[in-house]
Amino acid sequence: MPKGQTISPKFYIIMNFKAEKLTTVIDISDNLLKVLSISRGKKGKTAGVLDCVKLQSEEERTIAKEVRTLLSRHKILNSHFMINFPRHLVTVKNVRLPTTNDSEIKNMTELQAIKYIPYSREEMVVSHKVISITPEGYSDALLVLAQKKSVNKYINVFKLAGINIEKIGLSSEGILNWYIELAKGYSGSVAIIDIDMYHTHIQVIRDGALFFSRSVSFDACSAESNKNGLLREIKLSFDTYLKERNDGVSAMLVSGGEAYTNGIGGFLAANIAIPCEIIPQADSLKTEKASEQILDKIRDYSYVALFGLASSPASLAINLIPQDILTRKSIEAAKKELIKSAILILCISAAIFAILEKKMLEKRAYLGKLEGKLRTIE
Image 1 (cartoon, helix red, strand yellow):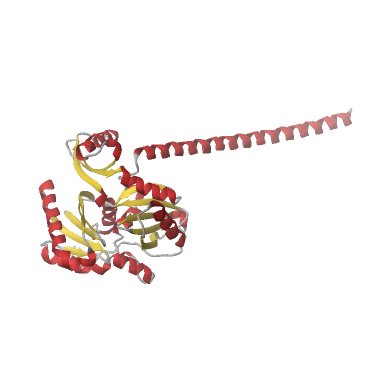
Image 2 (image 1 turned 120 degrees about the vertical axis):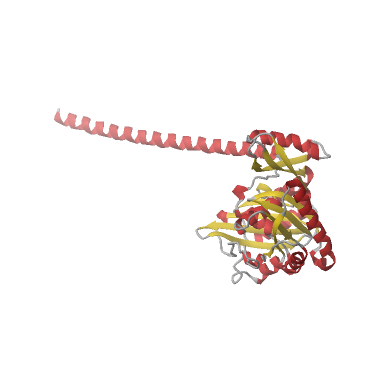
């Protein structure tokens, strides 16, 4: 890909949208509450809402109230809701499993998880994503581990807010989706550097699969004094990936808050000897229709992971909702379907009975007419 070429995803800000087609991703981290909604229509995907507020408290009821207020302000009522779970709150491990069967992979990842956590299995939430299948019949998988108390805090917040969460996605997979939508022309191992106000994601993608993921603390407001520290972390990540995969990073994409991305991206390009592409978030929007408020939000904060999660939720493999809640939801959904089926059967039965009754009445009326005619003849 020619150096200097900018890739722009096809998202547009449209404030009038049909709520029933919305997918809304909510991010709560670093004392910030972000929300991004994407709707789907005949013209494709459009960004309906993009906003961010600073949280005044870490107390669950207060955050729930903030969530309700923000959603009410934008009139987001009927939507599929998802949570963006931050990378720095999970442990990610690459594992190779001697099977390609989905149920066996799930069972094996559960067993593998015990090796990497200093907690009991009941205190953890485990999810995974298959990266690749080897010719020998092995599966390379990304194992994702999160503390259950951290996940439950998110669940409690949205329960208090009266919102049904359908999935808790991982920010790393969101960034992967964002990249897939953007950069189909890149080959080899590509590093995505997503710079947010307080954390920076470093991940390496090859052939549409996520092979390496890491999050480091980085204060973008003090970028000048921290640039060298971030550079060291990125180089360390690239070296680790080289040792693990015997493969070097061939290109680097930098995105995030507009206020600091260009300066940091230029610094990284000057100090890392690989092609570097800076992708402004503003290019993800049809800026002539975007309000100044929205431009201010993307200037200060990164929405890369949220864009990726909301753009293709069906493709997401990682879900950090605890298994007991998923099982309960599955049972409730099955009950609802059973009730719907029962109601449908009753309606069909009633309709059939009504049709038969009508025919019987018609026959009785006809017989009555015949009897009348016979009496007249007699």
